[in-house]
Length: 311
Image 1: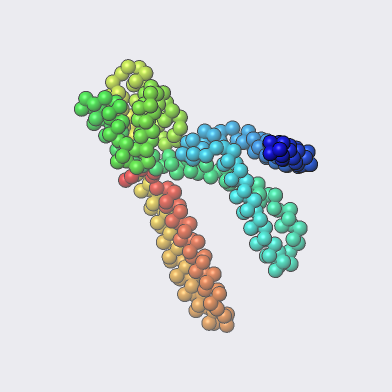
Image 2: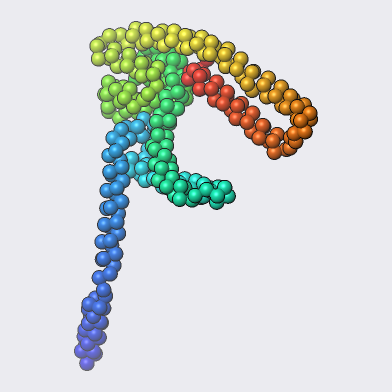
C-alpha cells in the first residue's frame, strides 16, 4: 500500500510539472529574440560607422588606447549625444531670453551632434601628436645611450634593455620592443612594428637606422651615430628658429597685452569723466575677461611654437 501511494504521489508531481510546462507561455524566448535582434541592429550600425574610418584601429594602437574600435565609436556617440543635448538646452534658454526662434536650435542639433562626434574621432589624432612630442623629447638622449652601449661591445638587445626606464615616453617605446623580442618575435619585425606604430620623427629615424643596419649587415653603431649627429644638428637649428620666433612674439605681447590695455584703461577712465560716461563694475569685468583671453592666446602661441624636445 505504501509503495502504491508513493507511486501515485510521484505521478501527480510529474503531471503537475508537465501541465506547468504546457501552460507557460513562450514569452521569454520572444524577448530574448527581440534583444538579440536589437543588439544585432546596434552592432550593424556601429560596424557601418567603424567602416567609415578604416584607419581607426591603427590610430588607436598608435595612441596607446587599449580599446576596441567599436567600443570607442559607441563611447564617442554617447558623448556626442550628451554634449548635443546640453548645448541645445543652453541655446534654447538663450533663444527664449532673446526671443529667438527655437526651431533654429532644433535644426542645429544634428549639426552639433556631427561636430561633437567628429571632434571625438579627431581626439585620437590629437593624442597621437601629443605622444609623438613626448617620445621625441628624449629620443636623442636615449639614442646616445644605445650608441655608447654598442660601442662598448654590448649586443643590441642589451643596449635596448638599458634604455627601458630612464627616458619617459621614449623608454616605454623601447620597452615594447624589448618585450616583443623577448616573447620570440625577431628583432627586425619588432623594430618594424615600433616604426609603423609611432609618429615621432626622431624616434622613427633612430629605429629606421637600426633596422636598415640589421638588414644590410652593416655596423649598427656607425649608422646610428650618423643619424644621431643629424638629429642633433636639426635640433640646434630648431632651437635657433625658436629664438627668432620669440622676438616678434615678445614685442606683440608687450604691445597688445601690457601697454595698450594699461594705457587704454587709463585713458578711458579719464575720457569717461569728461563726457559723463559711466564705467561700472560690469564693464571692468568684461575688460578683465578680454585681457585674460589675450594672455591665454599669447601663452598658447608660445607653447605651440616651442620645440618638442628638451632644450
